[in-house]
Length: 271
Length: 310
Image (cartoon, rainbow over all chains, first blue to last red):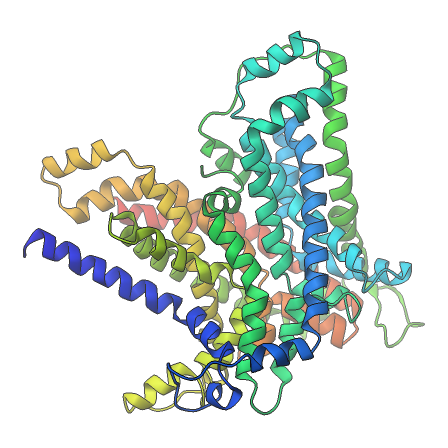
């Protein structure tokens, strides 16, 4: 077979597979714009007169409140994780503590600890303190869950800072704060972006802890979506609209920051 | 152990000896401490408390009947017949989803490593399933793909004159694995694609010139090079999927052999209100995670690599 024909066939195959893989997302977005009777029809329709009925119904169910809670929890968790991770990662890379390896194992073992192992005491303690169904408390827990990843990732970025720069800065007699925030940090801003992106994605999408640690006032979007399972009658359009809104912030963040995504997902191991 | 592996991946670990004086060491500790204390408070302490809970007879329905029972919760976990099926479900769902997403992810990584028009768009579309909120993904699959009336899969079945299948009730395990594989294939693809793009093109060309076929080049050169990337993908993917809860809660509610440990614990603690028993399941989950993250993956790789380099 001709080489270029073979090449086009592989490209065609690639597109077919990619589009098939993407189809459920496409279908979700499309269904969100269908009138309910069209979306829940046995005969799937590709062409229809679009409607925002699904979106209105989702908002009528109070989705705005859940989205705001999700936003509060994710942003707060991201700030907590990044603010704590920067100095810790600095101490594990540039200004070395003894036993760097032990500290790193501590962080990674915490990351790999199943949430199932910690959720019961958290629930009991928060219940005793009256802090269940508190959005900031959920954010604190999310911050802790994502901190180890943020530390590992920030460290991999700090390791790339040329030590001569730090040394020159010390010779100039700059203090620790200046050394970190004025000299090193501006060089690793992509690392901060990576850490923030991953923390935000995991916090926004988290379902298990959100279901257990919140009930109404602090309810976030994933458990709200989960409540559709018990729905009756036709609800595919409103479900698709709600799922689209819920998924959109993370999809856009991930699309924009694809490069940061790989490094973040691998905890900084892959550059 | 995973620490060393991941550490070895770092292109260069700064090793030059640095003059460290006492004052500097203390300030470094001061930098590290807030993160460590925060984590100890929110994860290590609760885990120790979980171990304590697991030794208690404690059901919230009977608040006065509470006391130390030693290993009774573990004994009844072993004898009640819930634990073993749950471990099997967790391990099977994790193993199938990880293996499938690595294989399919590899296929997509190879396809997207080529130069073609619109590659960036194809890559962007491909990573989307991983970004979709897991609860949303499970719902979308449950209703718009698997459903007997309005699901696309059954519309396809009808169009091809095949029997209609109620996926999430007739094949609950498969349904969960499909959704997880769909979500994690992009994850594996991204990691493997980074590996493929980090390959030395000169070596590949030399292999071509020496007359090694595409398949031999792949198994002899590319696969060993990708080994580290596959390890990272499998390790991180497995540890996340071992905790899987969302698709279970939404697709099957733990029926049909899909009651993973996370779901079992949820059921026991928050529906059955048996704190002691649920805590025992939590401890078992940790032990299982440690085993899977060390032993099983290591063995898998030995087998996989021995086969690949024959």
